[in-house]
Amino acid sequence: MTAIQSAKWGVILAGSLFVMAGFWALHTVRITLNGSSSLPDHAYVMWGWPKAIWRGAYIAAEPPEVYAERFRGFFFTKEVFGLPGDIISHDGAGAVCVRGSCFPLALKDGKPFAPALAEGVIPEGRYAAFGTSADSLDSRYAHIGLFPIERIAAVGVAANIIPHWKELKAWADARGLR
Image (tube, rainbow, N blue to C red; front, side, top):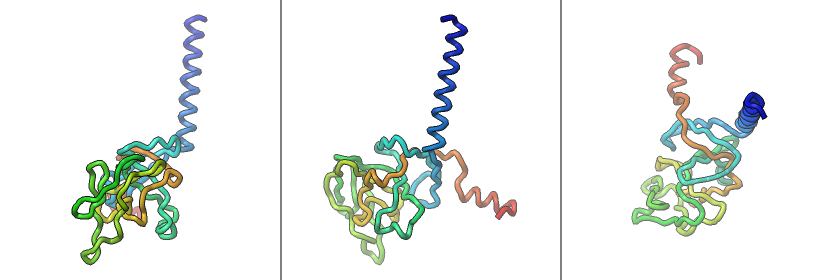
């Protein structure tokens, strides 16, 4: 094979890989915007396949049954702190802890908003995921619990590649675009 033929096949191969990656991205990649203060970042690049979940990944999960009606059409976006095999415990103040990170329960009238997630080992196929604010609806509460892989629609990373929605709103308001 000549150098020109090798270069030609190299361009064809690289172009084919680029096109395949583009189709994968169009099919499975999404940008998730965070409209609350439950997480530190305001945008996440997420993909539906492959669902390789690691500690520190962000997940978009279908709301648990208890909130399914109220949050229909929305996903719970949380950061993964607990993987299968990790231990859920409580500290002296009643916060839910995983691998040294503790998440206090929100208080309503001086009492926890809801019962804490039970202590124990995280089973296979389930993940403990939390927001950063005390009022985040996440794994710290028993009625939400651990997120099963079947309800996780996408996995991703923080990517503040676009302005925060409040900045976009202010920009639009300043230009009368509302």
